[in-house]
Length: 92
Image 1 (cartoon, one colour):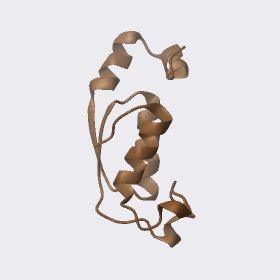
Image 2 (cartoon, helix red, strand yellow):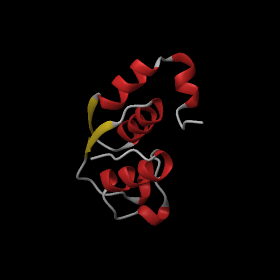
Image 3 (cartoon, helix red, strand yellow):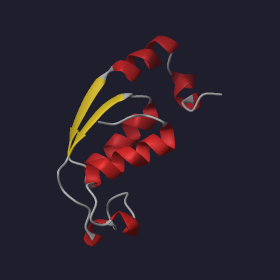
């Protein structure tokens, strides 16, 4: 069974292949950008690029998908690591 099982119920193999190869660039890995990147990746998009030079701060934790252990790290790097671990998609 594929990790994208639910997406494949509604989309053909041709559409899933297009999503996997469709490039998307997201500027910002904060509250909106991080959640958008995660949702697009879980929908099957396979070529994501996230641009954000900001670091995670403690006050980000209530609205962004990061953890206390991530404080001080770059948002884009942590987001890319999390998505790779969860889904196996490499995010640049």
